[in-house]
Image 1 (spheres, rainbow, N blue to C red):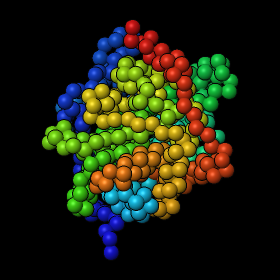
Image 2 (cartoon, one colour):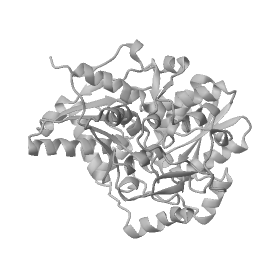
Image 3 (cartoon, rainbow, N blue to C red):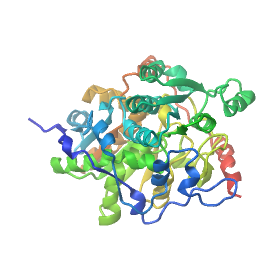
Length: 454
């Protein structure tokens, strides 16, 4: 029998997260205070984030950050996640490539997002915080944070991008099941939301808008902190449990990846999968390529500009150095709601700038074609976000078929699509369409970031 699924013993759950900032050849540029332009210190972030997350955000010295034992105990409920050899997908593609996927869909919330949610909520609880706020696009992060908040006994409020709120009712139900309060964004509950709705009463929202509302609520609510599911350095840090496990599992399989692929919104699952292998590239000179697969409707890596920009739509955050489409960017209402974000994370943007990774964009219909082929081959219906990674994997595997080159490909199945079936309904009915913003539209949105850099 072929070895298909590789697990690790519970006692091999990573004991520390890997902090790539400590080994990067070029450190990320500093985040800046938008009022003064000065680099920010960790204590400058305390009003928004819990203190330990703020310290981790700016830590460029410590390569390994210990995982608190209560967090590891929660991880043990589903970690280690399986590493699976996709034999049937290989057969369907008639490729000599060996394809492996790390199955993060097995978590209680159905995606990788819980790796950071548990850490952030734990640190908030230790600090005496009683309430946390956040935003969510497709709902994976909102569901994960809701679960983590319930586990550690604090209250959670989630602003969900309005288009996803309407598209994905069962994501809302998951958050409600775990006891969170959910509000479609933009809303009339915050000044930021009111201002946006005044300009456009039919505004369907964006992650940048939801971030603005969540931060405003956190800063106006006693004993409350804001949490974020992607983009920021400490979120990338927490996700490295994915790649650290995958490295051990690939060793058991007797292989090492030539390609590491993950879908890309703000960067959390890509970081988690890629960074432990990228450590080898930086420190030992391995030749692995790292590809981030993003939607063509929100192409910040392939068509964005590297400069300082706000992480939210109305300008409440520090200025981040990142590849951005401009903080006023309004993404199309594609079903991969978790990838509809205007900017890339600070660390990832520096790595992209330095040529250590690459970006590739895919049309929505192509990603669902890939997701359906994967489901019919491997028996797992992927989340619309994960379909982007699968589209990239298929593209690379077909190149191997054409060239006869035998490559080992690792990708992250970041979540399942079991509560995204309305998206698949649209795909099968022929109602789904592609969308690519015009160069003129992109130039107009990027101008909002250009203005901050003059």
